[in-house]
Amino acid sequence: MGIGEEKGRLRAEFRRIRRQISVEKRDFSAQAASKRIFALDFYRKSDKILVYVSHGDELGTEPLIHGVLADGKQLFVPRCDPVRPGSMSFYRICDPALDLRPGKFGILEPCEHCDALAGSAGLCIVPGLAFSADGYRLGCGGGYYDRFLSHFSGAAVGFCFSEQITSDIPQEETDRPVCAVVTPEALILPD
Picture 1 (spheres, rainbow, N blue to C red):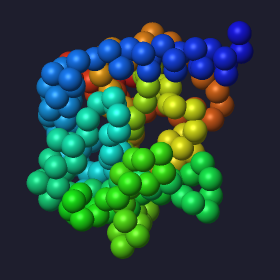
Picture 2 (cartoon, one colour):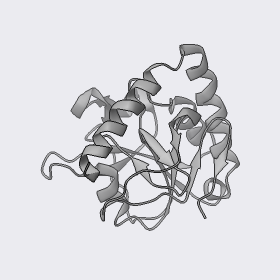
Picture 3 (cartoon, rainbow, N blue to C red):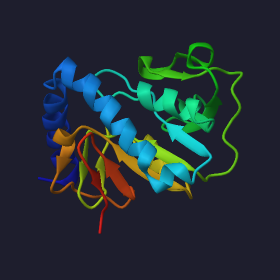
């Protein structure tokens, strides 16, 4: 089985695992994992925090988004680039109710009036279907985060349920590891 086929098999498996997590556990987990992010040195030392807007059965980022804004940090959220398919850019939001609208894939994205991220530093909270202990992630297959992280100079931290941690993820040349993975129960620092 090739790497692409193996990743496809793993994507199906981890989508199934993530769907089976109860609503009660989801709410608790989003709060607990957000608190772990707020305790990180990466977070405390960063003025710019890049956060995805959770969708569907992903680990919820709403507590994280509200906490970043409450801490007075600059919050940036991704928007898919309509001109360059497969790429995304981050834009600053100050009020989720005013600054976000449904975008590609039905995921909330920054409105046109939001300012683009200047530079490539800060802390980027990265989603994934699965993460390995050595910091590699299994995304949904579009390559958006791998492309973004290839030119991002800040810290990238995975954010997921504990059930999404696995021993190994097949790697391709374009895959970019994160420097840490946060779950509701643990902080995983790759060797």
